[in-house]
Image (cartoon, rainbow, N blue to C red):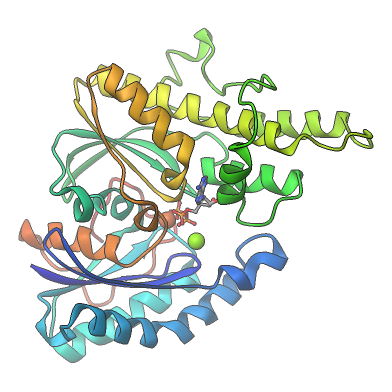
Length: 344
Ligand code: ATP
Ligand code: MG
Ligand code: FE
């Protein structure tokens, strides 16, 4: 099916059009520049930027795809989780289009969209598979039996999300927001073994209860203490070594627990999604450890890892393909929509 997808959960306004697993258009506008001086996303600023960007992105997506909204089979929109005011802009737009063009409307889960988007690059997801979702607001291990109807939560972060840890550590060492890409780059010139930062929830005592859960706030504090102890040192901060060592801790824990989850569930396929999946070290280490364990790993190209409309369209297409009932036209934004709820 041909589906138009609208994303507005955070600071990207995305409109994507797909035909099944084929990507036809992916128009994205970001308000990230407007948030840089605040060091994080300001909800009101994001909402207004969505209002300004929505119509231009709708027009760009149709022009790029070479098809109009009248030709799609359905409209999918992120109904959660995310910032309520930001979500509302996408939802109101999607409702208006569904009414005006008489198309079924599907309110879908942003997090599951981060997983579904891989289909646009590597074809239909083999199931069951384990999905590692690593983004700015979430870090979860999922068991995906069916991307549209059966997504289960194996574990998640007990405190900060992986992307959040990247952003906070970047701030500590004076790198700009959002920190992920900057740390990724700086780490390339550093030694990942230079500083022994802790690996959250990997102690033997945590094995039972927190086997598939994560914790990154202790790591962030450890970096803060390390930096503090060297305040005023004449040599300045070894930024590259800090980045490489911090990144190694994050990626080591993420990949070790993910491979463990695959083995524990007898699953041979792994997909990684969300903004942090754009990380070079995470991609390399996942590839290395998965292949050693006989697991096939799929990670979409970086441009599809961060927020976009194509991921929502890709998930919408799967939902339509299953013949699921459309969402009601009065669906609301659900800022804390659980990952197990794929369609509102
Ligand atoms: P969520 O999906 O949980 O609602 P979000 O949509 O804000 O949160 P994404 O857009 O999926 O999050 O990802 C943004 C996060 O990804 C930011 O924290 C950013 O620092 C991080 N990120 C982006 N690129 C990289 C990279 N190359 N390495 C590490 N982190 C990265
Ligand atoms: Mg963003
Ligand atoms: Fe996201």
